[in-house]
Length: 259
Length: 256
Image (cartoon, rainbow over all chains, first blue to last red; front, side, top):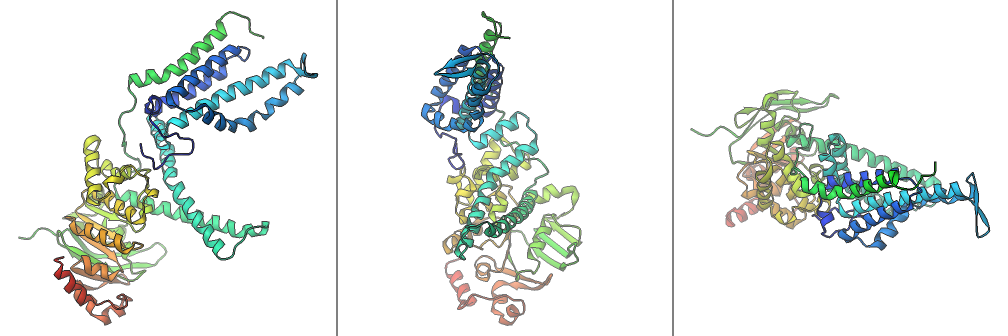
């Protein structure tokens, strides 16, 4: 695959998971996450099993545990609330190191933390093994609206063009003695942003003309093959299938759930 | 009997919606395989004229035809295959995430798929010497390379007429020379729209001057450029110290 447009979360090497068709990986990671969310929070073993599934996928994809661990810190702002739940939660309390903690709150915190972490890990694995471009191809094959995939395709290309333009404008400002330190100096920045918007708008217009000149009539023609076969789908969907079995056992297996 | 002209313009007129008159009756005819330069100062109406060649602008008066086919709605798709336009800024033209996908866009719109499509992409990239870069992202290429890819995106449609809008702008001398070498090899009718007069001398035996929406002169490039008064009247200038007669003699010696 092209090294030209890899994103910061992509690990560029080859593995069975990298080779899997993007649409399969998208469906697999989304359904895995949904199944994890449906799993009752008291079934601690079930989350361990789900984590094990992800560990196997990470092993196959040769994604280092440390790489995953540092990038999963992104969920921290979302789980801050979870830390507060045991302290302020209602219901019966339990004593831990002299601090009274709510049992309900503890379970709630665990619920957010476990499901959030598993979801983030699944997304990170998808990102690590799939190029930007392939994600869009996958969405396209999953019949996402063409307008959405076209806009995403253009963003991939023009985000870089715009960023380069913004960089050049900033350097030009700095070269004329601009030294943004105070709030009122934001004026130049804001005008710059406005100019950038206008340029992007005009570029869009010119780009459209160039596309029409090459026969564009409202849809980008399919440039890719038919996508994943049965084998690809079976391989990829084995991951959410295991999560589904785990969910079924945790719902209907032995042991009473706390109402 | 001679073959039908590749490109014919008859009394093409155009006024922008804001009332600004851009073209005041343009007549031109290009024979198959001919290379012609369309010269003119900024604001002469060059780009407006280019947009008439494949029917993007067509609500003015006059007639444009390409190899005998009128530029009009029932066959605009065929016209856009026959007339390839390379726009001035390659970043406007290259909108797909990789070079190969961008080159494939045109022929895919013509209905090509699979191996036929990828063969067409290879052929076009080969013609501009960019085959080694097919999977790269356009923003990782140099400006000169992007311009060559922009030419390939149009060549992939196997056009009859190739129109280039200021192809030498922003190119360093080496890229400029490489592009000229590529353009000279192409088996197409070429319309070079530019105010870069030496480039016109280098590539096109014939030239026309467009000024104020009209063709002010049409003839051999060397003769037009030797007429200092004519150039001055239309805000065209040769680079300081440039002698078109000397350049022509040099071109004749190298067999170009």
